[in-house]
Image (tube, rainbow, N blue to C red):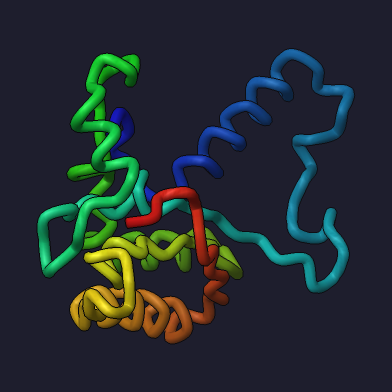
Length: 160
């Protein structure tokens, strides 16, 4: 993909936009924005989509998703010709990504399940990929061990 960052990229872009807004119009009081600016119990987090983050499309039994097929078949339809083959490689870098989330003080992480990783043939009758299940278990366990609440999007428009 075009960005080779971390799952916090969206948050960093937002912070960059807020910072630019402060320089242009400091009267909004954004400079003093912090956790106490939000109600008690407010959840601070970040999010990702499997196709855009995981990569590792040909590893550990993962099958192709509809987006994999589209990106490879119609390369001219994507402005920069990118695809999700490597993405930002969260599949291999998830431990470091969770470490960064913890360091940033985030409370939650919303991610999507790549059903192509769990059901490579697209159906239960085609078999369940144990390596795919193992990856999501490791990610969830790492998040919980660091005090970060996982939120799972069951379908983010990339079915097998």
